[in-house]
Image (cartoon, rainbow, N blue to C red):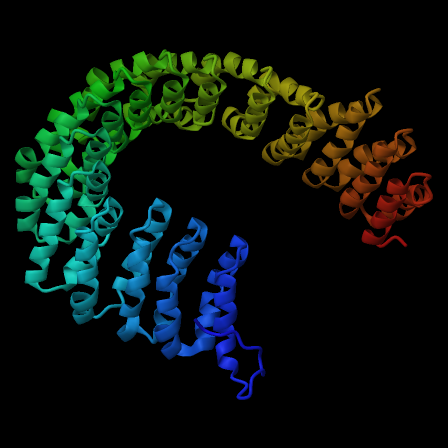
Length: 596
């Protein structure tokens, strides 16, 4: 071990030993945090040591001390991935392999994964010769290790070295991969299955057909469902690589089997990857094979599978071949969708509600009115708030297809009901949707049906709702203009200034803050300002200091004479208020508006 020397201590005063000595001390410290810190400073230490000593002292030391807490090892595995320049660049990069190799075999998965990630990163910096001399033997050692931990790590390294080695070494790599695919330990087969698609992408097409397909078929019928579901993921990559004519014989039998697997997890994976599979296999196979498979997934006995399939409804329908799209949807998909609307599981209904509106653009006006509207209505009345919300958030695409009259007659009662929902988050979501709804429905309709709602929210007992309602008013004024505001909104807002509840009086001020700019100088000066000034005599200090804040906010909208003659005296009076906060905000307003 290296003796610790104080800087400048000892006869020769050798400083260069100092950093490594401190590091070694800290790496041996009882306190994990200190050990962790020194690992995170590794690059600084390596810089101080220079490339030569990093290679000869630091790396061997690190390789020998690998038996620590997982977080320290994780930090080390990550650091080493960025160490190439610190050991002297690409020609010496192989020095980093020994410590990373031992990290790739530890018990903790997170550490192994990080070591593999760093190895993949530095593999790119090896020259082809170094890959064969140093990197490939490491992969072989890991692949034939006694512990499953090293064999799982090997799976992630095949694809990065395969493209850049000679054909004999390639053959060895393929052989190792084959062996791991039929390993006794499920964890290893799982690792191999998860890398199957990635490995297939770097192989020559002949080997994909001769090697990968047989491995794929074997993994897809593994006894462990966790292995089978990963094979489904690989299916997408493999199908993309193969020419169309081979898909039917090589891939489809396995895929059909996966879609009907006895384990719901495998079926879930098929549902989850459905759109990608659809693109990979092309329109013909989609029509003959995937449509019936999709119907079955939508009717699956497990809610998770139905939800995953429901999520894909719109995408699946969009990607169907155009000539037969409508027929397929109306005869095969829609009947299943109708059943899902009244599914017993709320996640399924919610997943469907988030995409179902998209079908209206695909199916056109008549079909939407006849078949989809009744479904939307059923979902708007669903007892689960998330389902209702997903429908409302996607109304605009239906509006484009069927027009506003039809939409409003059918959907409005449901929206009003939600606006008064007992759960405040539901009310909040509706408020946030109001400006969009108002824009879609137009001003007459809005005044007639929705205006009272918007006003009622201003006196909601939840602050978040009052705040959102204030913001909502501003957006509505931006949409409908100042004149509309003057006639419909401003009188009602100002009326609240005399409310016995001080929270409502404060809401008046918040509304004025956000409306003044949108309404312009005249309305602000003539209608809003007098109300704000009158409220400066309120007996509640919270209201008074909000008056000062409001004056600061609306000041820029007013003309200078109003500022001097009306605003200034009130702020000066508030600046001598008995309450600290009122004083503070009044003085702030005076300086911001330059009235001092």
